[in-house]
Image (cartoon, rainbow, N blue to C red; front, top):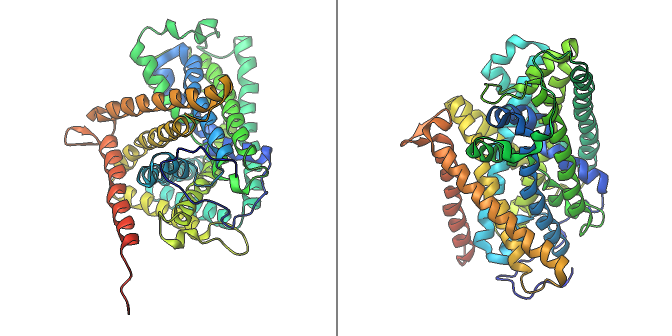
Length: 481
């Protein structure tokens, strides 16, 4: 391990955990980062809302939202070079600010992973039935049962080893991008030939943020787009299973985020043009709508891309969450059972199973209580992401504040991570304010939006869990028991 900065708040024991070392290269790690972000699904879920808010300026919104994600990716890269550990944010924040703050960052990361798995499973189940029997896609429990099957299958794949997961991810990433490429190959000639009804011609003004009449709409669009880049940090959670773990995961994280930005901007230009560059319209499932309009009988290709995208992200979301809890257990922040590694497959078997079971339980229980409550809990994911990304950025700046040498290190290790952390903190506050509006979601509690209440309660639930666990660890064993 490289020489550590000499100003850590606490010493965090790290080291090999028995995972399959050296199995991922740069290409495989990058593919996992892209797949975990789920670009086709993210576009299907978010692009219509951004177009409704920002109209023709949607492409520049995608670029602006990329900037804070890029600087946080740089912070991850620098921290990984200093201390490669599959616990990522938990380990680094613990090293900078102490175990309790680190525990809460790990808790926020786990919450985001488990809750988004429920959403991904729901989307995968719905899109599967849209493909094979559209009338059945409205059957809540059929979709839920199908989603549970997806989670179970991906949990099994993750337990079987990183190699099978990597091969499956390569296949699903290729299928996903092939579907988006087919859409682009049809859309571009339709726009160029003027055969797309109601379409608008792309303009340089689409990349000028100052042409947005409503500043609040611009900020809202950036906030929506910010979190569609989430997921590239899977590369870092697999650092102990990657060749050259100090450099390859960080490069893969930055590379995958850049590829995602290019994908989002190109698709944003095409879809914005096909919708006529109009803001204010109710175009929630805009990718499906425009593909059906311009692709005709080929439109199911986009459905397949979204289905595969959600499935791929289900697989990759389990990976970092399970490895995060594995690392927490190795470092004494969770019960020892979470540190178990399968002797044959070299995967965190217990942690992987717990993540899968937790996601299934959450999905089924929330669906049974209220589909609206499930939707609002998914909206709260932005709070969890902003918390642990901000803490990671602050941790990077803090750990290297005395050891950065030269302008380049100061930029990459202190200035950019600090800027990213501040932006994420602002995004956290803005998301909370937005979710506080009772009209922001499908439910309201005590005059506030259900998404904010669920998010705050879920985050706060980590405090007593942490306190009970650390109190139990300090309690001396009783003789004779």
